Image 1 (cartoon, rainbow, N blue to C red):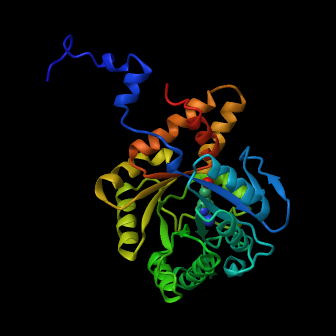
Image 2 (image 1 turned 45 degrees about the vertical axis):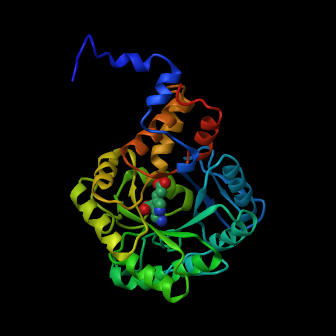
Image 3 (image 1 turned 30 degrees about the vertical axis):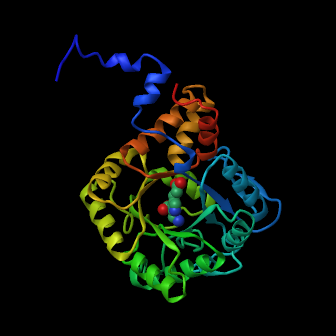
Amino acid sequence: MTRFPQTRLRRLRRTPASRALVRETRLSAQRFIAPLFVKHGRNRREEIASLPGVARLSPDLAVAEARAFAAFGIPGVILFGLPEKKDETGSEAWDDAGAVQETVRRLKKELPDLWVVTDVCLDEYTPHSHCGVVVDGEVDNDATLPLLAKVAVSLARAGSDMVAPSDMMDGRVAAIRSGLDAAGFSAVSILSYAAKSASAFYGPFREAVDSAPKFGDRRGYQMDPANRREAMREIALDLEEGADVVMVKPALAYLDVIREARARFDAPIAAFNVSGEYAMVKAAAANGWIDEKQIVLEILTGIVRAGADFVLTYHAKDAARWLKEGSIPA
Ligand code: PBG
């Protein structure tokens, strides 16, 4: 290898054209999945204070918002629901008349090409807000599995293309896969929140769906943020159980986990650029402390560069608009 002064890496950085030609990571709206929060009703929009620009929407307005996403070239959405009532088993999560199920049916009718992902978890639907059934003060893994499979089947029946278990019970991917197959939904895919850490970055999401645990915390089932090797075991197990895509969550403090998963596994990898990551950017931008557009595109580029094939992000619509305007990267 030659070196300075023969080698000058600045030569290819001189103009927008040369930079474009040698750019290694190309961000595209096709890599985004946009989250939607849905609740019962009509023409309802409730802003979420800690997630500026994101709202809880009734199914009709959720479809309108999804149409806007699609117009920017975003291929898919992930739905989270708010129930009318909560109970110990989270039964509204598998109610075919639930807000998520209704929204999925409308989405598949009005925007059939949009890829519809639905979150599978009980935390929004239980009074204690834990991700499973509580027995003697603890989340009971095995008692939760059949309920998760029921939720997935109900969401598949509504028309979901992909279900995304976010509960972190052991064995849930296998339970969901066999539940789906037994019900005739072998074409419905599974996006597993495989390496999901017990993270403070979910704060704004929990405000959005009122799911902060009413006792204890989620460290008994979500991963210790300190453990990268364990994250690889989680991913390997979920792939063995039949996950089609494995996800790392959160994204920004876990880029090394994404990177290592990319090196070790050939399966598609997703990353969730979660609510707290979004809220920090929005807060700093509102104060004029950062350039929101540049920061967002840099963050998303970093997540893709680390190895994510696609990114679940609340920035999806803004980022897709900026990319369409051709603003990145100059
Ligand atoms: C659980 C779930 C959570 C998120 C997605 N699915 C919250 C949690 O585990 O407490 C967080 C997403 C975000 O913060 O954007 N159903």
